[in-house]
Image (tube, rainbow over all chains, first blue to last red; front, side):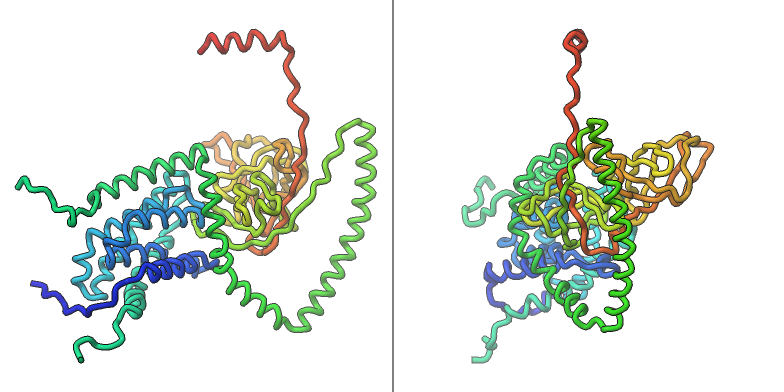
Length: 171
Length: 301
């Protein structure tokens, strides 16, 4: 039987912090890259949607994920709803999995995140191909693999500002 | 068991309900966007909000390239300068010839009482970024509605046609390249005058002429220029050269593969052509001939 890990009590998340992380992820998604970097760049917004819907399932909901998807649709010039649908599926999976995922260590979470990212990107590809796009080749899915690899550093980084400065156990 | 949930446990509709709702709305929006291009106003609004972020994302890369330019060595500048001077000399000779030809052409056109072509101005634009969407071939340039760029305008570089503006945002515009799978350019062979249509293939450096009969007079190395009969592309701009012709006896048409003339992958600057040529209105059909036709149409309905 899995024993729940002892969890550190973290500071509450401020809405401004979520907004800040979203802005940074948008900037990373909009960076103009060429060559190999273009193929392996993960979808940072997708990762962030998953992270916040696992961490704050009652604050970061499907509505916000859907709106972010619309913004990405404009940024990438895709059909309205293509990213929106994908991100709401990710937010849904994050909500369903949030209790389960938090029981696992960060490395074990990787094996949850990888298939989820691949499914999300496959959904994007199917939606684009339904409109008449060509299959872009298997390297298209490299972005998801690198995204899943980034999950662990991202979790550590996003957790840092929420660690309380003084240890509450030592008075 | 009949007890209802206390109000403080209520969290709205279940996640699955919400997902189905959003999925349905997304699918409806996608169909609407693909078929009817409504919601363009929403797209414009979001694009305007997104603009500063897009600029901010491009800024560091711009800065790096500027710093790189600053450290260009003197020798490379000298060699470039001499090369440009030679090109300038060659071009000026061509230009003089062109001026004479333009004057002669204008005179001949006047003789023919043909309408003088609109000179048409051009706006220089810089590529901001190539769109990340791997399913299409599109670019984003730094001129938008504010600079008079409109959807439908033709984009060229120094060697040929690059594409067409498909969406104009307030400060940016989206250019669909001629290599995009859904893009077609009406062209004409410069050697024989054969008119045909050039389609993009979705691959980087390849275009295709479809539906050209096996017996058509086309050869490797033929230059294809815009024919201008569509009213969108001005005539005479180089588009592509034929690079390979495949004859397949099982297929009624020859497979003609072409290489685009424009070097879209190499350049940073493009030219957006304004004021496409105006065509005269389609002449009205004689009233007598028109009458019975509309009647039969109504009857068919």
